[in-house]
Image (tube, rainbow, N blue to C red; front, side, top):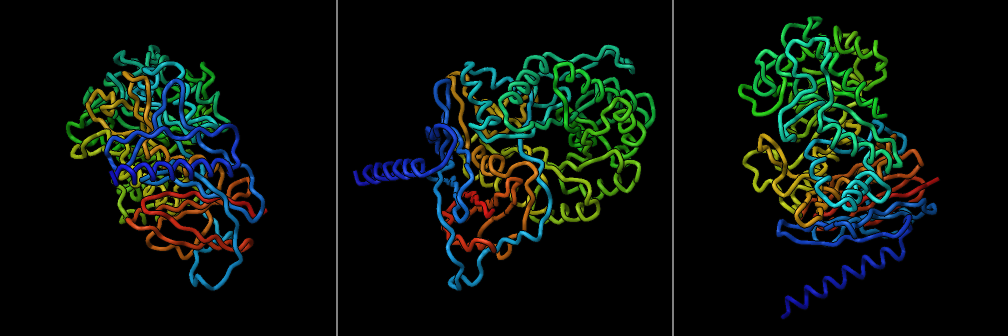
Length: 526
């Protein structure tokens, strides 16, 4: 009985806190709160269906001297918020975190996810009204406002079959090139809907997993195989044309691309019996392909301003790869950025990001793929409400941002309860999980972690220095184009941590980061 009463009291207090937060919170439109459901994976999901879905607060400019704190935590809150006032600086806290507006770093490109076939299949398995709410959750002002979309060029493991756009053997001029039903039924319709509902420009970039089998040394889209021949040869030129044809076909649907990666995980195709679509490259091969084939062809077809990214693999191998490609002055003229994945991210390799930036400061670094439960031994693949997986996202994003990365792209935007579909059974977790039988979808803690970055760190925000960060917290700060300051604070500890933030123009914020929580603080000083 005592436990029941305590549980009831806690629910009442949570409801009261949220109610007060909404009362005193400036937001656009009616703020709809999370409908929670617990599946015993550490935290809870928020349930959405055709008639209801929680929304994300939009922030109006506050008076100078005021700030807002937005909180998500393991136990109670999803983007709950309240305002406060700066206090005059004093000597009570001898070492506050200090904002230094004079020392700036990289400019943010943005945050987003991938329009995989699996994403499309799952979204379209819902009733139409729920489909709309799921897309709004990602791209509209009611949601977390992603501005990046990754588009697989052809099939990947998160397809239901292996396919290319031209399976006609030796059709090196690609006369039989044609988009697949997956493009026409899933990718293109959802991209167009996302772009229509977004108030931000959605930057699309394409990534290929494999060339058609007939172009490859192993005559197979899976396993260990590379392009036949060498750079400047007939197959390399045909593969470069494949990129152009893809861009041209999407242009017929009024969809234009911001960027391309030269190859998804090029090291995969060098692995014996690799289990799904892949194509192997060495850095020397990628360099020569860009110089002799892809770069010139993109320019000749009017795609010279496209942001071509190299690498697109784990940062463990990035320094040598990037050096090999970009030490060529000709390759450097065709390449805009460096794409990295998160799967082997450990603290020891953070310096690789710094070293890469130091070598090539004019080439941006962008996180282009991440997902939880990707290793075979991690079970279950879908853990509804997992807070541990959410914290792994927050840690990686903040570490990346503090080491020159300009944005972070999640993998599938929607998967089913199994973590698919995936023809190779390479199931993983996702920020949103679809239950088509119930006609509902579940926003995981990972979704709300993404919100703290994608919603409030606007494109073209510039990272600013914050000194004296406590070792018990993960912290990053930005100055937005609208002159708002944004600070994200993550506490992954089992106890709360008090902190002080000093703004040189306004004074200080004295706050508390509860155990296992993430906060986004926003204020204006102009």
